[in-house]
Length: 123
Image (cartoon, rainbow, N blue to C red; front, side, top):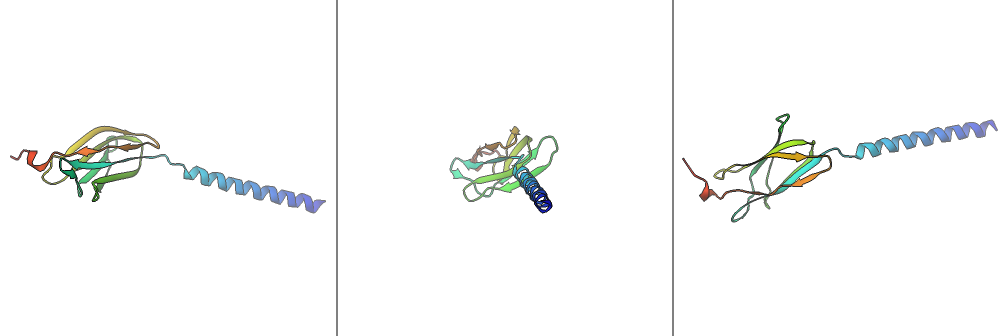
């Protein structure tokens, strides 16, 4: 009888340990971030090679990426907050969008239309 009791205690302990590890892994898998993505175009089509910056307005911390051959950019795992998005490319007017609010598990798509180089005034 004593062996049965010890065995049951061992099984209970193993089950609780397994359940605790499983619960902790599940909690760690939850994401508490959002994301920002989009496409950069001009009147003639997509704009590859543009520098896109995402700046946290509270901390002034910035992240940077470059549009791909399809003119797309992506900022995954963005901490919730208020951001400014800047898009720049030589000979184009820099685009700036302020007050972009990113919340937990929110993925914002913000497409940007740059002014064509011929429309940018030069000093």
